Length: 328
Image (tube, rainbow, N blue to C red; front, top):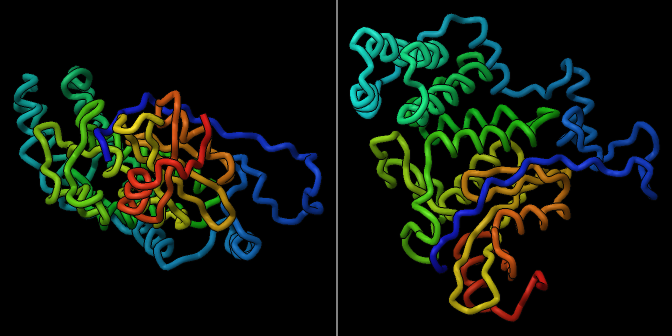
């Protein structure tokens, strides 16, 4: 695949389907087209199970979360060297530096973020660190301390966090938002029209887009292009219940033009998220994904090629130029 483009920020919109459309289910029947944040990603069986359990499906993980909320947090987190280096570089006094580090060690990322704010230096060079602390604080909050991630979070910690969204009535919006916040906090693109060499026709495992395969930089981020973001999205969104996933490689009609790769991931009801680099958008149903793919590709004339793996999508994009999914 050619050098990878970096699309602009994808807008986040939630379509409102026509409630009076022909063929609508009878009153009270499950309708996957009801895509408001109050009711998505739930099958009839899941709705019944939720009703019996106060609105959310019961799982071993949710039981773990309940136990964690009832128990005092006793996290122990290592402070990576880049944190101290960034604080020193920006002239944070030793006492405030210690306050931030001590909060991180306790796994109290919310306090660490507040302490960073009190330095008056949370913007500019420390903005990325602020986003990292805030993302981890949200993980701790959402899981009641059952998941206290490191800096950067490990794959297993992320998988456990995203698994908490499965069965939630707001799974699509929560999972898309979490992936976008994670991607912007701990990853960065190498730059427009640049690419990362994952070997072969592209990465086949999320491990190829995470440390130690990818080096953590001085800003606490790893460099990934669209393929790295897509393979991470497939893994993490899959844990949230969006397991029906395919990769879409897009190229201009001109042979040898700049390419891009995105992910389309749906749950069992067709609720769909599109990932384009560090942007993630809940688009509605799967048939609503094309407009998001076009925005994410940032190209005027597109040809798209699909595959269940990145190598398959890239191979189709290279070898099947005339087999077009989209027409200009």
